Image 1 (cartoon, rainbow, N blue to C red):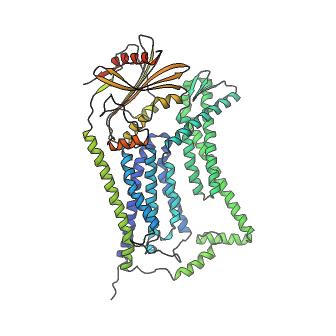
Image 2: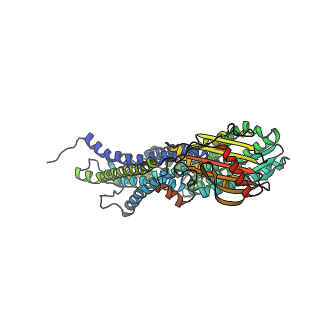
Image 3: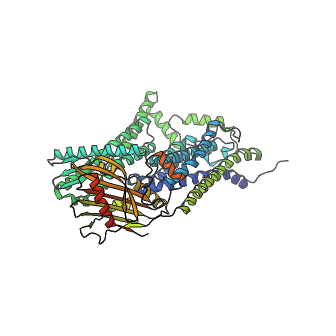
Length: 593
C-alpha cells in the first residue's frame, strides 16, 4: 500500500530546510554588517562599505540570471548523499571551526569595536559558514527539488568573498599606505607647482606657499580613492567576466588612476591657495573632490569596458584559429543565445541533457530519503542559529554585569569661561567634531603671565549606549601626539613617560613629550581617562593585542571617557613645563567632589 503525498505539502517540506538555511546565513550576515556599519560611518575612507552588500547581492543576482539563461540543469550531475555521519570531513571541520571561533571573536570585538583583527576574522568566519552551508545544500540528496538546483556552487563564491573589500584593512598596512601616499602626493604636487612657476616648499605633510601653509591630511592622502578603486575594479572585473590577467591589470589601473586624480586635486587646491589665499580652499575643496572622484570612476569604467571588448575579440580570434568558419561561429552564437550556452557548447549541453534525462527524478522523493538528507541540513542551520543566540546572550551578559559595577570615582571638568582674560576659544573643525562625536568639545589658546604660549584640547564622552558612539570613543584612543604631530612635520625628541600633576584634591596623570617645531621645543602633555578608573590612571588605549584582550576580560565597553591634551611653547626644560602646567591646571580644572 502506498501513500500519496499532496504536491503542496511536499513543496513546503522541501522549502523548509532551505528557509532555515537562509535564516541562519542571514542572521550572521546582519550581525556582521551591523558591526562593520559603525566603522563605515566613522571612517570616511570606508564609507563605500555601505554599497558593498548591495553589490554582492547584485553579483549573486547576475549569476542567477546567467544560470537561468544558460539553462543549467542538474541532468547527468552526480548527487552526493550526505547524512550526519557522511559529511566530507574537511568541510564539516571547517564549519565547526568557524562556528567555534565566532564566540571569542565576538567576545573580544565587543570591547574593541575598531579592532581590525576581529573585524577581519568575523568576516572570514561568516563567509566560511555561508559557503560551507551552500556547499552542503548543493550536494544534499533531493537537491533536484531545491530552487538552487539550476545553479552551481561556484556561482556564489566570488560574490560572497567580494564582501572582504568592505572590511577595514590592518592598521599597520593602512598607516603605511597613508603616510607613503601622503608623502608621494605632497612631493608630486610641489614638483608640478614648480613647473607652473609657483614656488612651494614641503614640510612633512604641509606645503608652504606664498599665502600660507596647506596641510595635506589623511583625507587628502589618496587612501580613500585608493581603497574605493580597489573595490570598483574588482567589481567591474567580475561584472564583465574578465580573465585573471585582465582583472589584475584593471586593479593596477585603478591604483594608478586614484593617485593621478588625487594629485591633480591636491595641485588644484594648492594653486588656489597660492593665488587666492588659503581661506579660498574651503569653497573649492568639496566640488573638486566630487569631480575628481566621478572622473576617476568613469575612466576606470571605460577601461573595464575596453578590456572586456579586447577579451571578446581575442576569444573570437581563437575560435577562428580552431577551424571555425565565420558562418559557423555566427550559428553557434545564435544557438547559444537561444539556449543560453556559450558558442560551441550547445551540442555538448544537448547530449549531456539527453544522457541525463533518464537520471532525473521526476517524482517526489520518498519520505524516508527526503526526511533523512534534508532534515540533516535543517538541523545544521538550527544548530547555528542556536549557537548565534547563545554567543550573543553570553557576550551581553558578561559586559552588562561589569558595567553595573563600574561607577565613576570622581567628577571634574575644564572651565575656559572667565578663568583667564587672555584665553581665546577656538572653533573645532566640523570634520573633527563629526569624527570624535564627543558630548563636550573645547579647544583654546592663550599666553600666560610668563609669556608661554598654550594650546588646550578637551573632549568629554558620557557612557556610550550605541555602537556608533562606542566606535567614536575607541577611535579617540588611537589619536595621540606621537602620531598626529609627527604627521604634520614635527619631530618627537623625548618621551618622559607618565607624570602625575596634583590639582587640588585630584591627581591628573599625563604622558609628557617634547617635540621640535621649527627647531623650537614644544612640550606636550597628553591623557585619556576612563570614568571608572579616575584621573590618576591613564586609560587602556588598546594599542596592542594584550591590552585589547585585557579590556575584554575587564568588561570595558561603555565607559565614559575624557581626552585632555595641553601643549606649551616657551619653557626651557621639561621641569619648567611641568611647573607651568600645574599652575594653569589649577585655573582650569573644576572639581565637583
